[in-house]
Length: 432
Picture (spheres, helix red, strand yellow):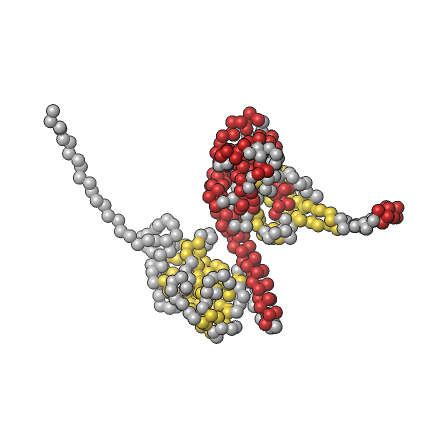
């Protein structure tokens, strides 16, 4: 195989769009249909574009997560990737076998048994009966269906469908694995088993396309993420960054709606707040300033490992807030979540806050290893179900390295080394 072929993408979409026609013409009677036919009065069909001008490439060993709200075009995109649908415009190039787990029960004949459907699915992927026979026991073992493998699949639960479908897909030796949200219907243990296998396949050079509303799956398994909104690419980049932006966006949508509902109920005009892609909440109280201070209580953005860090959260309440929960979280710049303490879980309870105030959080001895970090601060209700004001990774800071010390990982754990020499055993001769 030439170097050019080795570098060629396994999947390539170039300016792909898809159009559906929505016919809204309804005839009330046969006579009406007849009259319309002779008069040739045909109303133009309405058009719906679930995808517009989408481009992406995927090479061997790469993984991409597809994010977006319901109706954003994710399923249409996957169907075009796998050849189920043809694009209205644009180009789709695929190289190698694509195994897909899209819709529940897709590719199964309900009257056939699980065992018979294994062979049926193999033929769909272009794999002969003899080759599937060699994989049969491994597929059955992975699916964990036991004696149910010889039962017609029309009697299967949704979880059993997923087990068998995923087991078949991963045993077809694909170059590309496409997995939709269908995996969420499986139990937690089987989901973990599937994710582990996906990771192993990715390490072996299989390209992965994953659609999931679980952002942690996207962060853990994918290098890149594509965010679809109204059929168009809103963002394409590093998975951790896109996942954070998408989380902030969806949360702000929810809390904007909640604020509107609260304002309508109170017959008040919603106070305008500065829009920020990484801030959300009801804004019944607002965090107006955050200070990061050093050991001398001076504002700083660079701190020494082992030194002190004081976080001051300045807030203003629009109304009294009963039993609030103050929280913060530290992230490494690559998205690794280091910790996430909050006042309630640590036993610091406030009955009410109103007007203006300051909440302080002090770390006497910073255990963080050198690097760049980002701080989240937030005010929530008591049981952490409603964000009042959440600032997500909005406050960067840096930890400098002490002289003469270098260490892997995120945190430094104070400890001591001690060597205990073991006496050399003496050779003894047993008497005969």
